[in-house]
Image 1 (cartoon, rainbow, N blue to C red):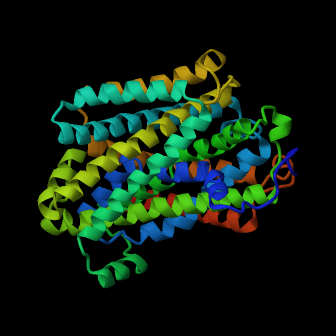
Image 2: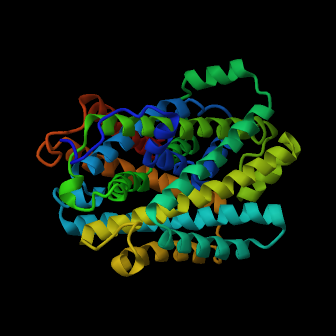
Length: 425
């Protein structure tokens, strides 16, 4: 079903193509938040290159999940929680929204800690100052900026992730050994290794990204003038293809960065027996004598940039989940007066995360275990997404493709299997 006045021609210029990129690139880049960076750093420090293969295997899985969530948003004109309301009781959705809020708040707190540690290393100003400053600025910007402006800023922040690619290349690894580790899977054989695999899956295929991706499709359409549900429902083949390209690029970029972070810490920390870094600052300080000051600087700058990208995504996805579950006015493009409860949830998530940092948390451990928690929650949400995406009536005869459904089903089984493996070994 085509939108009224939809443009069905293919973009012919590079500028048009860049403009067509958005939710997929932002969501993919947000996946490499400080939580992801810490998880990949721990994986490399503890296990060396043993889990490099996960960066390749999870790319199509992550892309398929995001594409399915995007299609739900594009076709139904609703966010993910709103579509779940047609399938599940509101009481169950309230529990899911609450669990998402808790997980995201922990993630935000840990992300703020990682960013603040990085800035303390760069400026010698106490991390508590930076925690408060980042929390206040991000809350203000997310509430005050219009969606089009915020989306454009977030898209450019994704470029910070190149810092990790440059850092790894500067180490001059043995590329033949790297290739072997990348294409020959090393199956985990200890509980720690299984937990790390669950954490990688949880931070790569993370629940908050499901809600964010679908809701951003709605925001994109609102920004194009499709303010009513009737005008947003349905999607043209070209719109769906463009979004798949957008998601493919975003997820490829995200997983490439994951690959280089694991590689960097495997070549430096793991090779020197440093397998239990406790803060992001410790990771950066450990890198400096091994990889050079420039590499440590890139690591810290990347942490700050990706945190600025990820925290609005974390807080926003929790706010969308609550607003859609209870039918509140919502949307980053709305003024505060028009979506007060939506923005209050968003602000509480950031401020609660900020408060966590005055309780002397271990930043890297909090980041790592929040990823494990996400890995345990995600497969249950994927079951719900599959039920929605295969419902022809709900999807207006535009259900997800057979290939997409099979890939997401495999993803769900893999995440359940990894969680079981963590507890059984």
